[in-house]
Image (cartoon, rainbow, N blue to C red; front, side):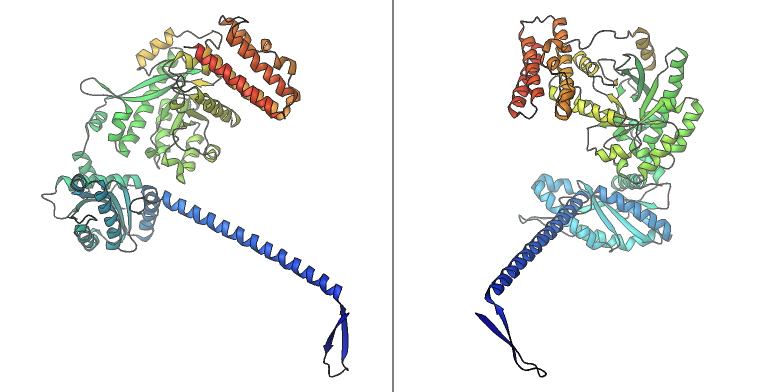
Length: 595
């Protein structure tokens, strides 16, 4: 039966178009299917859209958290450094002054002491809202931490422009604050100011240091000051705030000591690290952790220059005595400025030492490496022939991208992963991974923290290229270093020399075998793999006095039998589990045998 469809046309008589019902059903089903597919596609598209939007929002939130203080939501030091560089550029471009202001709260500690830290946090949050509102929209406020804030006040024709701005700031700061528990507190402040371009400060770090000196002056002269702020005189402030450490440095009390670096291949001392020491008036030696925090950026730059100059002179003395070594030294990240490269060129040129014998170490966790100018400075230094090392790798966040992009020749593994291997042998996995990474990137690796003979044996067994630590030698003054080199006897012994060395060697060998089993097991000799007697570990155990009937040798054989079973069928999950169990039993027995 058909359905009549009428068309009314003026030119033609009425006609009837008959569509069979089966065709209508087929058409309806097709239409429904098409609509369903369209809805599905639309839903997936919307889903992807919302997922991407949520991901972008999450990334934006993470970036915001990384650049803002969690308590006050003001910009933090990282954001401040970015903004300060831009503000300095604008000041130069526009011919205006920039005021970098270091603000410290007065009377904040009594609030914490009387009402608790939560009350102190309320004060900080309130001021975090008031300070930006009191300034102009073009100005910038950041919280450094504690009760310290930094203000960037731009577009100034002269210092007098600051007076009306700071009057509003003082009013906002001194307005009483009501705490949540009903108490009312009142806070005042002291502030130091460094102007740019005005004095000798040329970098953001120097400006902050100058503002900090001026703040010290402001706080020290509260009774006599006209305002709560002081525009600093850098030289006068520095002299007034001179620390005992700065005095010692200026009086030539610094000494350079040297810690030998051993080649894992030749077992010879091939280099030394130059380390700064200060000797106080009583003859006591001060270490970097004690004196570096008391030095300014200029002091640190001067310190690096003194260390390098002395180290190169001492290196030539060692040359004359027949010891041809290379030398490494640390440079504070704050010292990397426009004068860094010319300074290095001057010191090295005057010494006559081949720059390729010099390694400059940069801290892995330094903010300098995150700045845009880092690559340019490092390439300039490397262009001089100096080798570059990334120091204390693992002590902070180090991305693979950083290792890929920086023009470094060497990485130094942080001693925290090595010096406690006796208590945390599992850290050997990390050491091995860094060793493999350095090898793949064609970088030299120096492992610090080699403090015991057990750890030294483990590092030599696993083929670490360069070693540094107390098991080789403590840092020594030049005369003691010369005596050490005269008395040093090259280690010609066989390694591993103890069970911990065998433990480390087993871990490394197992990693290589496991990779080969996973990649291409046909390249392995299954019969030899399954026979523990053909493994070097078997002969090592015999050398240590363990016979074939000993527990350790039997566990070693069981491990190899399990490896052979996997080689016959790498897809057998059960065989892998048996092998991992056998390996762990053998490793734990090795550790237990040391006790």
